[in-house]
Image (cartoon, rainbow, N blue to C red; front, side):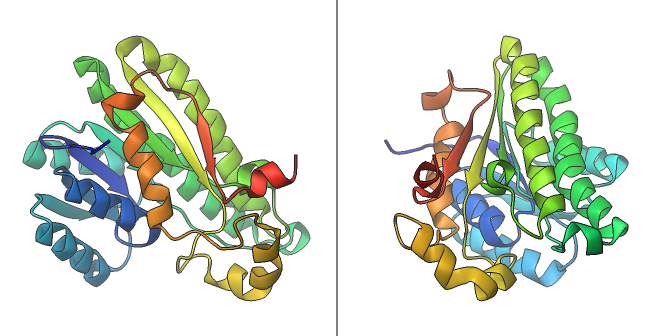
Length: 252
């Protein structure tokens, strides 16, 4: 079914590159106004905005460290003031700092947890406070198959995503009575800049274990996110949907 997000305002954290960018562009292509949160590279964020504008959509980008609650609350207020109330939140901001547990720097543990889990909580809290008043809204968290499978050298990342899955389910229970849905998608290996190191180390072996024999592109994640954000999914909440080419099914 053709998705129509005209007159909808979408906020995408981590929306300047990778999966977040693909999601932002997809919503723009379906008529939404899109706001992007990014942390470091203003030039990359600017290129993403230009691609959104080419699709005929209103857009804005804000530098925001999602680890900082006050920064997130301020960013949400700016988006609302300029574009209107946020209808859809996509939590996609995330980092990796891989290392074996005994070698992992404590600062790297904290940084990943604070970005991937605390950041999603901050964005969810800031947006949900306003959604509750309107009694509607959709929140989609971008998790990972690592939440269920773990991953050697990824204790911090896997723990952050497992926590995100739990946060998704808890928030869904709290917000459902007000008509707000909260779900997550859990991609397997996706071809992004963030996954480049892992793909270089174990790419061929991992690809052989995937029933579909390929890695995902960011665009492979988009369709499910659009569906979960649409009226067609108004009775779906508290779910974590794997998008992994069959890898999860192969190990059960």
